[in-house]
Structures are given as structure tokens and as C-alpha cells.
Image (cartoon, rainbow, N blue to C red; front, side, top):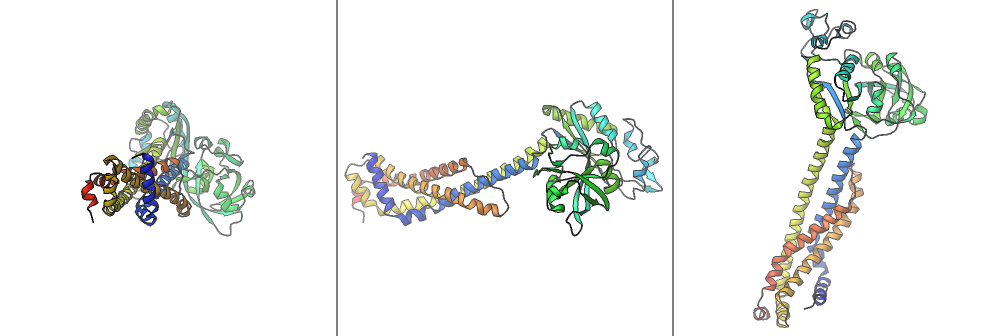
Amino acid sequence: MALREILNLVWINICGNKSKVLLTSLGIIVGAATIVIVVAIGLGGQKDVQEQFKNLNAGTVTIADNSGALSGNRGGFGGGMPGGMPSGGNNRGGASFGGRMPGGMMGGVQQIKKTVFTEDDLEELTYFIPNIEEITLLVSGSSDVEGGTLEEELSSTIVGATSEYMEITNLEMLHGEFFTDTDNADLERVAVLGYDAAVSIFENVQDAYGSQININSKKYTVIGVLTKTGSTVSDITLDSAVFVPYNSAVKYVLGSNNATPKIVAVVENVNEIEDTISSVETLLAEMYPKGSFTVTDAGSQVAASQKSANTMSVLLIAVASVVFVVGGIGIMNVLFVSVKERTREIGILKALGSSRKDILLQFLLEANFISIFGGIIGVAVGYLLMPVVRLTGMSVVASTSASVIALLFAIVTGTLFGFYPAWQAACMKPIEALNHE
């Protein structure tokens, strides 16, 4: 039998059982739509990760104090450090609690074992570790902000940093300029607003530049507004933060007793980042023998986040595959029934000279047509559902590859689950088939 004749028979059978074809393909439709949505969600998750870390250089290293508090009151710890701290390298371990406080005690009260990084630490890290290109102190906390069109105080994230922070995090100015080293040294009360922070306080970002706001009941002049980034760096949402010079943040906003600075650095050669981290840990152990630190790099954070997103995508695709299996079982059951109903037809075709191959191909093509039909409808349904998924707040990214994967799944499902019923039909003996009632 010619292929054209086989295709004609397949088309006649499909058109004569439209409702059956539609019901049979429901499983495939659901599976294909699931594949399209799942891949779109996975790509959306990857895009979210990229957006989240787009302002973070791959070679960024963050050093944070990991010491735990013991007990008691810090009682004048901040005031004992300036001038009382030795400047030597290896003697720094006890110096974080002040050379004036023997045994870590002050007035009979045990001090909290917390390391407070200083600008001297930046100098030593830069001097002893040549792979460090940029470095800054970073401190953050929450404080009430007043001003602009606000009718009541707004609790905002206040970030204290040096001028290098702008380059390290790839920030761009929408209006004005970032604060300078001179602003930091002179304890200037100036502020740079993230885009969302400017909108929240002033409603219009143009009104923010040059205006004054109150942070912790002290006036600050807004000297700049950042371009919207949508990124998070060191657990700080850049768009909603208020940035002030590091020294101003410590003295006027957070207080020296409450400030827990981090060190953020960018390495020059990313390929040597592991060796650089090892060198940083070694140097910190010498500088602060009693300290405990966490040293992380942005590349590992991005890789871990991407891995999590990819793992979730794989799991969701596995779930979609189960849906395809269910759809395939549906196709197989319907074909079994169809073979039973069309036994006499099979006998007539064989009596007229149709070979096993012709019968096998006819039923396989029917299974594939049903699955392809379901795959195409499922892909369309998947694209139609994407706007609905976006309404839930999830990011979805349409992908041509997802459509191709869904269609391939559909074809493979139709072929695998349609083969046995088709083979059963092909193996029928003509006389038995013709005598079947």
C-alpha cells in the first residue's frame, strides 16, 4: 500500500472520530502545556537570578564578622578603640576589644567578642593581597526617614559605604553624583537615594535631587539618585536603600556600638579568586586570632542560585513527564479499543494485500497524529497561560526550545504507547480478523 493511501485512511479515521481524538489527546495537551510553562518559569527564575546579581562583579568578595556575643554590656567599646588600638598586624587579635581592657573585661562586665573592621584593615588587605583591585567598608541598618511628601516616618535601609562602593556594585547615577572620600572624611551629612526610595519619599525622582531629608532626626542633603537596578547586593536591595558616607552612618545613624561593618572587595583576576580568599582568611586569622569570619564570593552565590533554579526546572519537567506518561496510557487504551472495533477492517485490508508493515504504520501514524495534535494545542495553551502565571508575581520567559521539547515529548509518547496496539493489529491473521464479530 502506498504511503499516500495509508495517510488517507489515517485522515478518514481521525476525521470520523473527532471527539474521541480530542478526549484522547487531553493528556498530551496538559503535558505539553506543562512543559512550556515549566521551562518558562525555569528561565524566568534564571533571569531573576541574573537581575538580582547583575550589579555584583563576579570577582566580588564579601568579608563579614561571624563572632557571637557572650554576655554583658559593651560599655564604652566604641570609645575605647580610636587611639587605643595598636596598629600592628599580629597584635590586632586582642586589639578589637581595646588595649585598655585587659582580659576582655571593663568595669567587671565581659565584652562582646565582635570584630569591628576599620580603614586600617582595608590598607593591610590591599597591601598584603595584591589581587585586590577595589575595596570598601560597608555597614547597613534600618532607620526612620522623614521628608519629601511623606506624611509619616518611613523605615528605610540605610547603607554606609565609601566612594569605592559605587564602582564595586556598578551603580549608575540618574541625577547628581555619589559622595566622595572627602565627604566621608568630613562626616558630611549627604545622601544618595535608590530609585524606589526616591519615589517613596518624593513621589517624583526629579524633586529628590538637592532636597533635604531627615535620617534619625538629622538633616541630610540629597546629592544624587541612582538609576533603577532591580538588584540585591550583600542582602541590600539597592533600589530601596538610602546611601550615606560610611563614617556618617556609623556616627549619626547606627552608632559605633551597633555598627557591624563588612568588607567588600573586588579581585583583579577572577581565575585566582579561590587563592585570594584563602589568603584573606589567613591574613584575617593573623590580624584577629580570636575572630571568626565568613568570606564569600559573588561567583559562588550566583552559581548556587543558578543551580537551585536549574534543579527546580528539572524537577518540574519530571512532573510534566509524568503527565505525558498518563496521556500516553490514554492513547494506548484508545488504540486498543480502536483495534478491537476495527478488526474486520484490518482483515479486509490484509485480504486486499496490505502487509504487516502497512497496518503497523497506519495505527502508529494515528497515534502520532493524535499526540502531535495534542502537542500543538498544548503549546498554544501554555503560551495563553503565561500572562496568568505572571499575575501571580512569577517571572516567565517564553522559549522556542520549550515548544520544540513539548512537541518531541508528544511524538515520542505517541510512538512508544501506540506501538504495541499497532503491532497487535499488524499481527492479526486475515481469516480470524474477517470472522471476528
